[in-house]
Structure formats: structure tokens, C-alpha cells
Image (cartoon, rainbow, N blue to C red):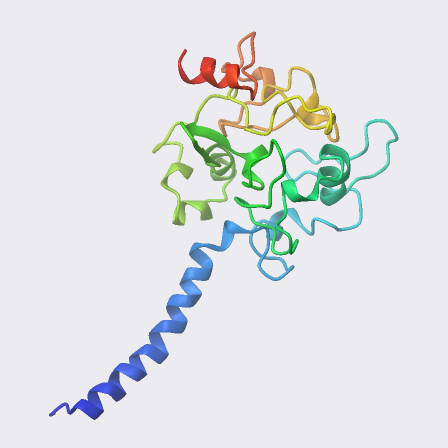
Length: 234
């Protein structure tokens, strides 16, 4: 068949009509976890962890513990547990000015808190100046949720070893303005599990929590300048 300029253009248009939507769909899947949910629906993180503003209490998907205010025993959902209790109402630590979507790795930021959103507490500095959620991804991988592997090879424990549990996330520092925020990745002071004791987070994703993780030893490394020096150059 002879292909003319007109028929060639028509063919390209047909292929584009078929392929582009498919690629867009794939892109949506590949990059889906850059935000908590896509349209305030049961997508991305929300598919398993639920609506951040659902009726309290939130019940941990990890250990089944219901979130409560440690002083009043009032039930807490994810939103008030993070915003009201841990961050004392500092919305821009997690959100951009539009509030939605809530991105996992970007936010407006405030003084002392980089504009990195969720990974400020749920990620660590895996290499100098690079904060990632490798430990969190491996936590999910070991629990059977392997979707992160579609984009992140460090999700597989066989492919990458995250920094140890004692390396604290960048937002784990003492701040008088947010006294209920976690400061110890080894949870020696209980700050990581105030709303849902007794376990904190498995920051390096190896299934060992808190001081039960041999990485913690006897002197947990905190999220301070000196802490980073000790953790990266020991």
C-alpha cells in the first residue's frame, strides 16, 4: 500500500489517540504515590490507610492499636494525630498552600522544616543531602505490598540496605513549638509512639522496632547536626 503524506498523518493521529491515553494511564500508576490520594478517594496510600480525616480513632494497620491523645484519651484520626497533636497546628509542614493534594515529598515548609512533606518524618537521609523513604518502602515490601518496586529498586531489601534504625528522620529534633513530635527514631523516650503505644516506626524496614533493633544499640542517633555526623561518619 502506498502511504501518502495525508494517510501518514492520519495513521499517526490514530496511533496517538490509542497510545497517549494508555501512557497517561501508566504514568498515573507509576507516579501515583507522590501523593496520599489522587482525588480524595481510596487510591495510593489512602487505599490501605484510609481517609486522613475519617471518624476517630485511626487504627494502625501495622499493629491494630487505636490512636488516642495520651493525656486526655480522646480518640484521634490521622489528621488530628499529625496536625493537632504532633505538629501543634503547623499545617504547612505537610501541605502546600492549596492543602490538596497532599504530596508525600513536597510541602510549603516552615522555618526549620524543609519543604519535603511526609518524608520529613517517614524518610531518612540515605546519602548526603538526599532524603528518601527507602526504609518505609521496605517495610511495605516485607508486608507484601510491593507496588513501590515499580519505580524504586531500593524497595527490595535484596537490592539495597537502608541506613540503620538509629538514623533519625530530618524532622526528628527537639522543637519547643512542637513538643509532641517524635525526636527519637529508636523510640527510647517513647516520643515515636505517644498516640499509639508501645511501638514506634520501623524506620529501616527490617521488621525490628525501636530499641529491639540492634542498630539502636545503647545510644540512638538523633536528628541533629551532630547526630548526622555520628551516623554517617562512624
